[in-house]
Amino acid sequence: MDTESTYSGYSYYSGRSRGSHRHGERSRDHHKSRSKDGSRSEKSVTINAPPAEPLLGDSSVLGEEVQDDNWGETTTAVTGTSEHSLSQEDIVRITKDLEDSVGLDCRRYFSLTLAVVLGLLVFLTPLAFLALPHLLWPDKLLVCGTACEGLFISVAFKLLILLLAVWALFFRAPRAGLPRVFVFRALLAVLVLLFVVSYWLFYGVRIMDSQDENYQGIVQYAVSLVDALLFIHYLAIVLLELRQLQPAFSVCVTRSTDGETRHYNLGQLSIQRAALAIIENYYRDFSVHNPALLTASKSRAAKHLAGLKVYNVDGPGNNAATGLAHSQSRAMIAAAARRRDTNHNELYYEEAEHERRVRKRKARLVVAVEEAFTHVKRMQEDEQQQKKAPGDVMDPREAAQAIFPSMARSLQKYLRTTRQQHCHSMESIQQHLAFCITNNMTPKAFLESYLTPGPTLQYGRERWLARQWTLVSEASVTSGLKEGAIFLLKCIDFSLVVTAKRIPYIQLSEEFIDPKSHKFVLRLQSETSV
Image 1 (tube, one colour):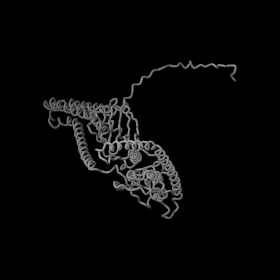
Image 2 (cartoon, rainbow, N blue to C red; image 1 turned 90 degrees about the horizontal axis):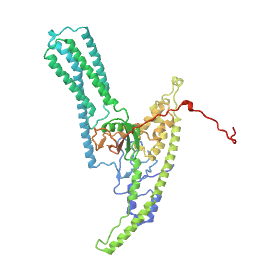
Image 3 (cartoon, rainbow, N blue to C red; image 1 turned 45 degrees about the horizontal axis):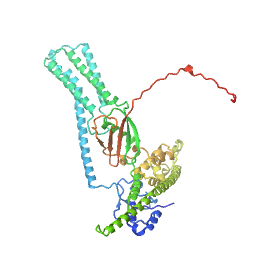
Image 4 (tube, rainbow, N blue to C red; image 1 turned 90 degrees about the vertical axis):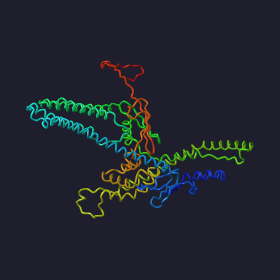
């Protein structure tokens, strides 16, 4: 079993920079051999594991991601410059986000309260139209005949249909909190309010003041109100649901950190509702964001930018010494540039070594999992009827805990090598293993979640869920999508850059081919074998 060491990438490069003038070629040989006794930097920071301890302990890795294979036997503190450390500005920003979230909750409940009040006003108004004449001037009302009583049934069923339709369209669990009001929904609410107020004004002036005796006409007036409300509900379905179904724009969504890109077709939507649709598709289609994959490229970039420092010890007054220092500095910068030109070879061999290590870890993992699954057997019905010792019969959870130790070491090494250790905790792996055992899934089905990075929703919510997204747009977020519209969706670790393009108009032409025109002749030549 090969062993590997964990060391601080920051301290290694800083130690090399300090000793470059003293050691020369010996320092470069030391870099190529990758010795285990690299010097520790004074600015190195110990990164502690989070409270919900993942499978592999500390998930912060820098440099070349070379980890200790003895999981559970040794504990190595990984040091480096943490890019997730909290500064005073971060604390202030987090506090502001919490205050904003409280404001969003208050606004959401306020909107819900207004919707409930408006709904009660709409449904109680037709009933009030029918009940007020019996309460205020019952002696003057004419007898309601058969046609009038039939209208009662019509009003009852129409109100029931309207109640179910409003519940299905409006009273749904909110998917997200938007920064601005939904324009079409606000316009519909205002339209309904004006409509009901207008009916009340007409009812008060023409019916209540004159104490109209024709009760059948009053009932027909209430029926007309319910019919109009049903038509407004149909208008709401068209504006809120049907209008956005036809694709009108093709949006390109790019993640800022790794450049992963997806394309979606959207209808006539405002910018904020398009952003909501994009975030929902992001959780389903994009692979989980893995910051550990970016640390290697960042460390290489920092290493390439590390140059040689030149000091003028004679001061600015000595012109000859200054000219000599300038010539020496130019020569040293040119030498550093030539060394940087050979860094692509180092990158090539690093990637080749990483791919070799991944293949080796994968082969060991596959063999370990297949061997572990052979130790589990589902009991058949005839075996269940036979009495067995209590220790021989296990439920799926106990079976998963029994076979997990035999594969844990190989799985731990593979996840560390592929930098996925922060995405999977020990509890989640055991739950997935118990799920696979319960449903008679093969070892390959169990390994698929770890060999191939899945969509974001596949992992635990604590691994990917952003408490709040920020929409950044030059145009108003309530305006509709337009050709060339660009906006950003920001969360803590990355941002999504969205570019909208209108789907072009397509002109199709028709060309008719007569079926009788499909006639062929055989062309014979002297050399033809036919």
